[in-house]
Length: 232
Image (cartoon, rainbow, N blue to C red):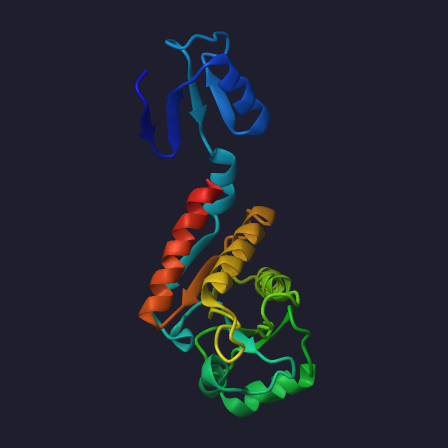
């Protein structure tokens, strides 16, 4: 009964106390054999199939690519609440989509609350839709910034699903001129995606974070890997 790890199932010898505790804490724990409590004959099997099934139909990737070059069904604009063309990612999206057409579509909507998102056509972009997500300005973390950033991601995914999108490209919202700390922003972004996947296991949405900076990209991949291990 030596310990060994066979992904995604982990086997290890346990005693009766450990078994009862594991069964009480995790619905995905199975026991084998079910009628014995013997250190030398008993193994506990952790098989995270329930969580895995929820994740299998959805995925997260981080790519070194400009967001305007993505061929996802939708891309997300890091928007301002007035839905006006800006600089950075926002400016690049407006330019690639066709400034006049995209600005006219945004003007017709008029406004978007911080922590929410709205959707317009993608016009000249490869993406069919642009989802305009308004993240918070960083004020030190004591003004509900995390909740607002989470909401911007979650609402974007809701809009993608409602419009039959099966792929969506995100920037790292609020980390530009809004100065949201990047590590915190990554953790919130990935958490929002994972939560949406759990709530909507059949959405079949591929999330792509489009990042050009090597350091930000590497940071995101590390946080994503840690989040995935924690989820399983």
